[in-house]
Length: 242
Image (cartoon, rainbow, N blue to C red; front, side, top):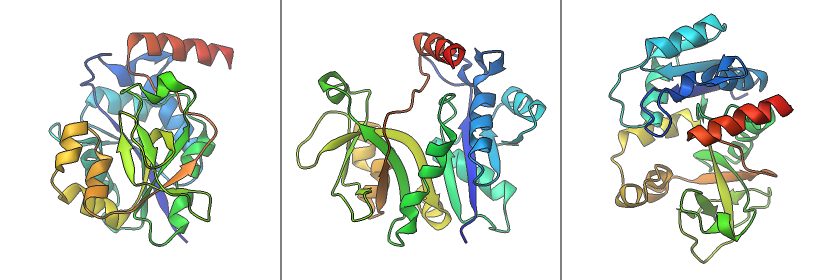
């Protein structure tokens, strides 16, 4: 049986919302909300990978496990891998979920759903997507889109990730939750950024450009992420409504 682990990369370097992981939402730091939801998914241990002693402290105080990593990792995936190697040198965990630390309202079931496409042995990693809601979202470069052929399982096999709409396949709103086979993550972080990755600022293109297969589980709706002060206020309001 697979043995998943969830790793949440978190750092204080956000420019649009400084100190984002520590932003208060309903009396708790945002990173604690994300940790709680990952724990509620009940698919394996949950780590927060961070270069900040302050983030580590609030996670530990809440009852979680935080792994301090170097401050100069070039990407969240590198930070996830470093924390994984420190926590699990014996390689007990063979599936690694990279869960972004700015998704404080994500449903635990969606975290678990990210693993489902890896039941296909040929898939190296998996992710999530939802239908695009309107034309404005379709043409919004801040909304990453994914497209590819449908599989018998109902999942997609990703052929393109893009910011601007392109032809060839129906496009979906990509949700930045990834489930890697451990060997695939190890290979991924050892690869240099690809030209398309640099051009479009989409890390997942590195995997496609190096022949790695990404399968996509489709869910009903996008996940709300916090990137700006306005997003933070909306997250607070949504939590109050719930």
